[in-house]
Length: 262
Image 1 (spheres, rainbow, N blue to C red):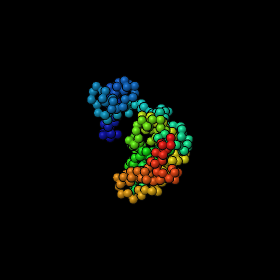
Image 2 (image 1 turned 30 degrees about the vertical axis):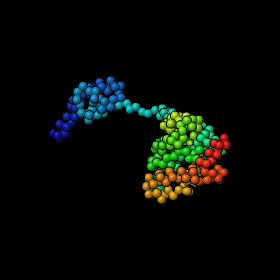
Image 3 (image 1 turned 90 degrees about the horizontal axis):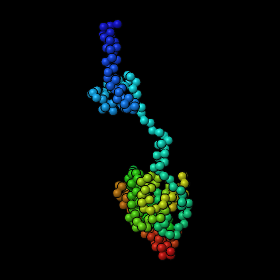
Image 4 (image 1 turned 90 degrees about the vertical axis):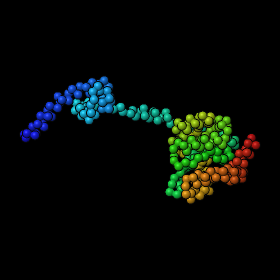
């Protein structure tokens, strides 16, 4: 063995004794934490100052393996189940309604423009076909549906929202606690389409289809231009676009007609 090799071996052979006192200090803190402390916690709780690299090396050397708290998959599923709720299909495709402000449908659609993507959310009164709440957004976050509900509240008196049914699909926005709680605060009742049944929300599909035929949204150069165009279209649709199925009246006219008849 070379001289340098001998001294290297001698240094390594002496190291266990040199580490042992520090090991006892670390072990005391480690045991006090029931094996759950990592090097950061051990370093904070040690009575002496010790480099974190040394703590890690000694933990590895003496097999002081920290117990990592693992997520219980069953608890994770239960938590998600508690947070996101689905609701029964109370509407059940009863799309023929004769009383305004009683049954609403809502959904979100995508708008491609100028190599960009926007999202349009709307709430439709099934009886009159009137769009009673809407929002255009640059992102698909919760704001797009919450802003739509705010628009609804602004357009209708808050008292008139009580006992209204609002129907949607089972999308993540509508099962979200924020949406559910806001609907409850308004005094409304939620209904949801069956999973994978877009026909259960046919009134919204119909409106989005007509809207995309009528609006030249793809020619918009900016989001603000798109937002204003959608705003103008909703006003046009509600007040100036007569529909054959509404006795050739506009949604606003037909709503007043139903209220007078009732």
